[in-house]
Each structure stands twice: as structure tokens, then as C-alpha cells.
Length: 144
Image (tube, rainbow, N blue to C red):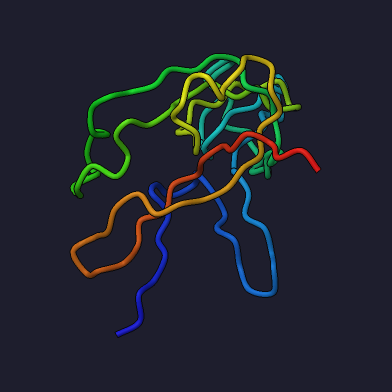
């Protein structure tokens, strides 16, 4: 049996593919007012227009705010506590959006507001069929 990778939520991300293809976050841009949103949607929250187009969002950003959680994530997570503690933060994308996602780093001494972050993906849990449920994460940029 082949284990598949499944997105945590439809319209949230494009998973990395074959041949080194990087994944990305997905969103929408309103054709009426220009507002952008993380996670594809059908109606603009700003002007209520239905004239939205799907867009790919940047895979980099800056840490705007963060917290470290010392309890397991909410459902659909059903596994043991590999995420505890886990960092979660608001990351500001170049498009001007703030996205709230888990972080790969959970040590608050290694996180700093304003630091550069890069999008990555990780296994959050598994479904009833044994498929890996994938979640987008932001990791502190490694200095080169």
C-alpha cells in the first residue's frame, strides 16, 4: 500500500512535487478591491465581491509575532505529543498578508520578531487510511 500525502485543508497549499518542485501557500486576490487572502475563498471578506482569482503566495516572510504552546494541537491531530511544545506564529508575507501557522522552532530563545522565515512542510498526523496529513510550517532562515 502506498502512503499518500494529503493537504490539511483544500485550498491551503500546493504540496511539493517531483523533481525538487517546491510547494507553496495558496490564496485569493479580489478582482474588485485587490484584497488578498490566505486560503482560497469564493467571496471577498472586504467588499463581498465574488470576483476572486486564485494566487500562489510567497514562500518567505518575516516573523511578526509568536507563541510557544505546551499542549497538543487541536483536532484533526490525533497522535502522540511530538508537537509539544510547538511554536506557532504570525508570519508577514511580502504580499502584506499575515498568516498564522506552526513553526519548526519551539525554543522561544531561538525566535525573534522580525527574523526571516521560510516555508516548509511537515507531517501533522495521519488519516484513517494511513495517509500523511501535511501542514505548512515556517522555519527560521538558516544563515548561509
